[in-house]
Image (tube, rainbow, N blue to C red; front, top):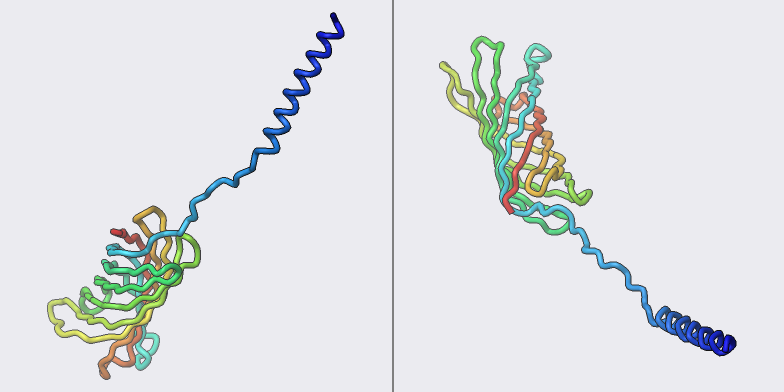
Length: 196
């Protein structure tokens, strides 16, 4: 009787092991499905604020005319995100306080630039820009303004879904012959909010 029980137990174990082996043969490993991260969406409208410093010098005046000024800018514009390439139109209004002269005054500049950016990581791009602007001085005895040309480069990093940190470096030169010896380099940094 004991031999019969052992034989039945062995047969049952053999069938169970065969079923496990068959199930293992039928199992096909499926690779997990991951959604591709397409990176930050740079497209759409944006507004922002930058703060920074400008360095101005006059090549005809020498070191006596070199000076630096603090200011802040409001930026707004629109980007078209084409994958790794980003095209945009950028408008900037800058208010610069110029003190320590015979009279303290504000300089107000407004400019429009075309921008082309290249995405360097999923959340960062570098860009180049060029355009025209109009600068005027506001004080008790001042009047008038001057057109200027500007070229710029910058870095923009997404710090949240709709929030970017921008650093902008710009070279500007007046287009009027009376001011042609003047040059200005500006560096600004701040936050830009996207609406896409």
